[in-house]
Image 1 (cartoon, rainbow, N blue to C red):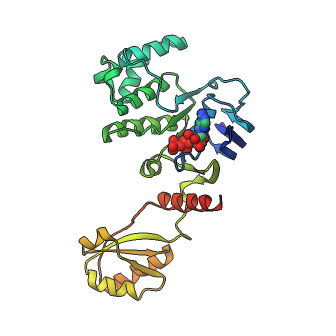
Image 2: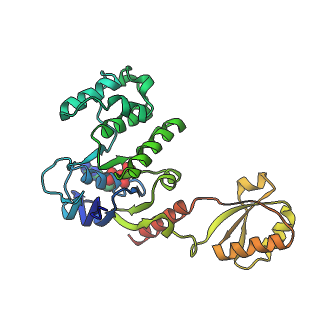
Image 3: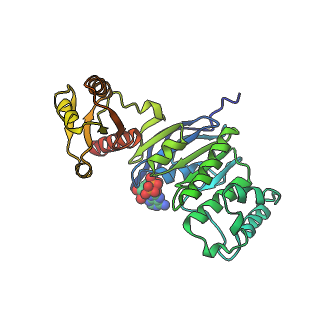
Length: 311
Ligand SMILES: Nc1ncnc2c1ncn2[C@@H]1O[C@H](COP(=O)(O)OP(=O)(O)OP(=O)(O)O)[C@@H](O)[C@H]1O
């Protein structure tokens, strides 16, 4: 098994004049992983992805991509494909002509064009000019263009931007298959649900610094209070029981009030477990229990707010 990191960054710094876009960033991405970059606007995600694509070089620190140190020259590292700030496409050409032009530029064959169009769900519009394409269709064509090179590392800046549910399904399918075949994907997104569905690991950036990097499972909710929606068979009895439960706070959520069956409680996981046991013992049926925001979103908000406060 290849144990070389697909991406290994140590102490990366990147600045634009006075602005520090990246500050001491360490990043390890294992081969075959789908790794998500998340962070508030201006956190440095696009800058970091641009370094992986060879669009810029770090001002300090060391970067290895697919086992090769990245030098000072601006060039896409061998085996890497992707885009930041939207894919570069020719609007006056059709989808198929765009891919054929790219294949000609790169000196690769055109055999895979039909296959990549199919993979991203653009077969039916292959003969249409890109000028008339929606944002989501352009994103998918950009992904098809990247796939043509059979990348070992695919780098995508907000690939889910503008995608409808069908487009998203295609893109998720493509990325999951690529990773299953051993390629590595690094992508940024503001959509926590997408990241949770796709990524095994995430890196959370805030003002150019890494505030978390690791498996989603490590963003454990065990020691962090979360808000949960609780729907039971007897809301009144449940409300009384919640009021007396240790470590559990009942919140009044505006959305929940319109739906009298739902209570919103804030608590840690162990106290939540105990609450459920108490409800069941009291003969109250638990019909729905789910976090109001996902654990990733809760961790994201907590970690990025902390970082903002220390600046
Ligand atoms: N070419 C540039 N010239 C000047 N400043 C830049 C440049 N590129 C990025 N920056 C600055 O670097 C910081 C990081 O920007 P970056 O685009 O990497 O953030 P981001 O996390 O991708 O944000 P978003 O979620 O809004 O896309 C910002 O303060 C941005 O204004």
